[in-house]
Amino acid sequence: MKFELRDDGLLYLPISVFYDESIELVGMIDTGSASTAVEVEEFNIDLLSRGGRMVTRIGVGGLQESFAQTVSRVSIGEYVVKNFEIDFCNLKEDFGFSAIIGSNLLNAVIDYGKREINFSA
Image (cartoon, rainbow, N blue to C red; front, side, top):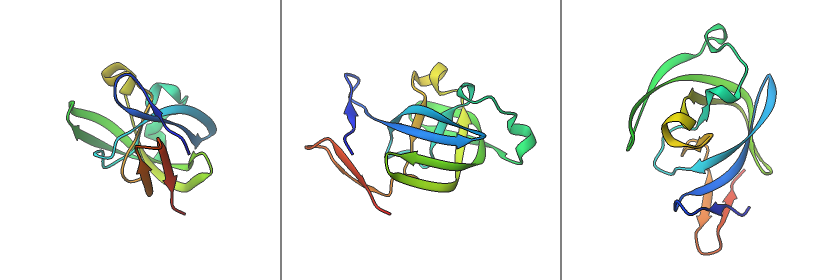
């Protein structure tokens, strides 16, 4: 699958998250992020009623409070993971994008020369 290399020097892929409904986002590939995160405002859900937990994301940008919750399905192209835990937080406000594709979802080989990412089953 081809990824997009934008002017900001970051790699992006479309990602679909199913949580009551399928939400299509553009995610930034972050091999240094332990978890995958999405912009909470993209989802019309009440996270507190679903048995998730509060977590603190620690990164280059500093600390960020988020809510970890298991979603039914996450897909990137043909690559699908069911019952996957995602962090819901305020990414757009803090970083300007809708999703972070973290290392917990990156069972993949990234070929920077070809601008391709190939996921393992």
